[in-house]
Image (cartoon, rainbow, N blue to C red; front, side):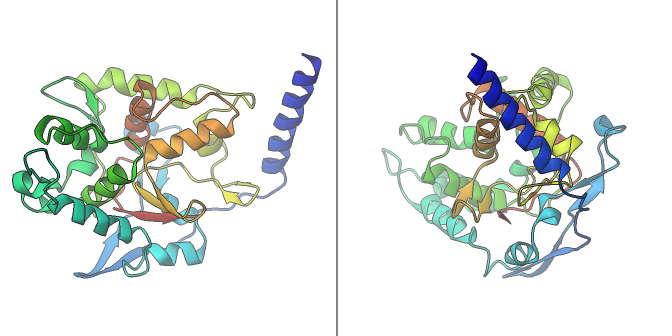
Amino acid sequence: MQQRKLNLLAATTAFGLALAGVALADPVDDTLVIETDDGPLEISTTAPAPDHLKGVMDTIWSGWHYRETETRALEADDFDNPGMVFVDLGMDAWNEPMGTNGESCAGCHEGPESMAGLRAVTPRVDERTGALMGVENYINACVTERMGLEAWGMTSGDMKNMLALISMQSRGMLVNVAIDGTAAPFWEKGKEVYYTRFGQLEMSCANCHEDNQGLYIRADHLSQGQVNGFPTYRLKDAGILSAQQRFVGCVRDTRAETFKPNSDEFKALELYVASRGNGLMVEGVSVRH
């Protein structure tokens, strides 16, 4: 027991020193203009904080502003953005007759542009079921109910490819998730998770992304933790990540037993975190370090 206490003290002290040993670094003052096949597209990456954050922060910033020059440049050109490979894979799956009776996404929805706006308003409470649903949940509803297939894993390649494609249809649209009405209890649950300390390090989401945003922890410039850029191509992982997949990594870094993607906790947390970015634009598939 004594050794465990000593280990915890050492870990907590090390984290404190990592934050205390560097100066505040403001978000980079830059403008994201993406070169696309249809011409330049300017993305609003900063906005006034939504009303529920008044008193906490005045301005919200996309995580794009906290990344290095080279990383920001990758997102600013679709040809250079490595995440676009997964969008193409999603397009292939969209047109594939994969259902038990040859059903395809295109057979019901025609082009993926029919999904425009979905990413900007999810997670949301589904009117038919009353369940809190993200884009992945809607994908699996089609996969199981309309195609007669086994549900895709929430962080599987098939799921993230389709998530990337659908998210791209909302690129440039303002994030506007509902937090009132039927969404209110889910939002409150997500807020509770956000401010709860987890793990041996006893840290919450807010400790990094609210209290210490702008500081460096080792080589990582702490952002506000916005999710308007998800799914994102993460250079460190050489692959695409969903928001809830990133939540797993964050909780694990506190040395806690993490919730699983699609858990009630992470779905509620995604709603709450998305609401902190209401007013930012969906970036489609972003690039982070």
